[in-house]
Amino acid sequence: MFGDVYAGRRVFVTGHTGFKGSWLTLWLLDLGADVTGYSLGPPTEPNLFDAAKIGTVEAKRPMGAGRFTDLRADVRERRALGKALEMAAPEIVFHLAAQPLVRRSSAEPHLTYETNVMGTVNVLEEVRALAASGRGPRAVVNVTSDKCYENLETGHAYVEGDPLGGFDPYSSSKGCSELVTAAYRRSFFGESGMPRVATARAGNVIGGGDWGEDRILPDCARALSAGQPIEVRNPGAVRPWQHALESLSGYLCLGASLLRDAGETGDEPNGFDGAWNFGPGSDAALAVREVVELFLEAWGGGEWRPAPGAAQQPHEAGLLVLDAGKAARELGWRATWSVTDAINATARWYAEFYRGAEPEALLALCRGDIAAYCDAAAGSGAAWAASEVSA
Ligand SMILES: NC(=O)c1ccc[n+]([C@@H]2O[C@H](COP(=O)([O-])OP(=O)(O)OC[C@H]3O[C@@H](n4cnc5c(N)ncnc54)[C@H](O)[C@@H]3O)[C@@H](O)[C@H]2O)c1
Image (spheres, rainbow, N blue to C red):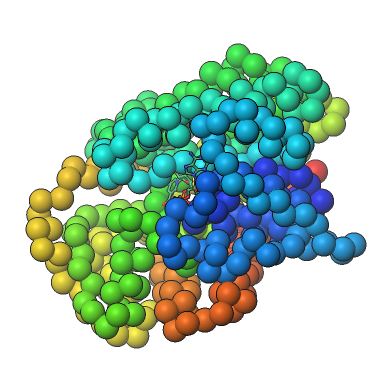
């Protein structure tokens, strides 16, 4: 998959102990990359990183195992970040570390902006310093969110050139992170030989191993495993649904294209260094109620009811749909799994976890999901899955 672009590459992942970071780290190690993770500890208990013992995975290589370096530090600490980048000397950086919760952003806006905006500044500033000494990475993928757009609630599908905004501090911090990245790209990274810097915008994702606050499928699994009905806060709210592997395949595909673009020859950038939407297919917008019912079907029983006080929930932005046409045309990426595929995989993962599966079994389940996802992507004609991307 991805040709052999990641095999033997030095990759730096911030936020590697988080939900998406854990899946990404595992996928990269299985692609043969040497991964350095830089992050605070896992944000929840339980969490995927510990549950599947991602920290013990070694990179898969034909000629012996590769390296995984697990650094625990703060993206707000620029010096520590700079030292870690210098030590790891990555060829590519995936920046995922963030305070990713909308509700928490309203309770702790300062922390959210400090982490999500100054964290991005710190990553780009340290990459700039390394690049100036000729030891910079060739590419950076900054993971933001579909919430970075000014959501006008008109129902139109957002394209990359639409205005940025964000109602709550989390959404606006991701809009800011986009603006910071664009300014660094234009001011410092536009020349040949400099790192190619891109941003990736995807919506809420689901998948095994997420225990983030206010996320409906972890709530479902927790309630059902305790033999209780699921309490649903916003049963009528319609949202897009996408498996984590969907957005991660987009990040990896984008990273592979950036690496190819930033060849050793120092060619001029040819357009991969910009913003990219990785949205689900058009059938992916479902009401929370429908998703809960699909989850119950996949779980094999149980029931749900509206949560007490469901009507007094804080402001929630209306449905925001991403247009992922640019990624399809220029990267050959497309959404692959149906909502049902994504929910079935997620329910299977949580069922195993709550049945008391060992870490090795959970890791095998993750690898099984990645393999099934790649097979489906290859079957659906996704260019990256057909190994057309090469360094
Ligand atoms: N999960 C989603 O549905 C979703 C949707 C769109 C975008 N995103 C983005 O994807 C990224 C990962 O999200 P996630 O769901 O895996 O979140 P998560 O909460 O599971 O993981 C966040 C990671 O960031 C780390 N982190 C937080 N503050 C830090 C700091 N100050 N210094 C260093 N590390 C820090 C945590 O330790 C953790 O490893 C985030 O940037 C998020 O905004 C997530």
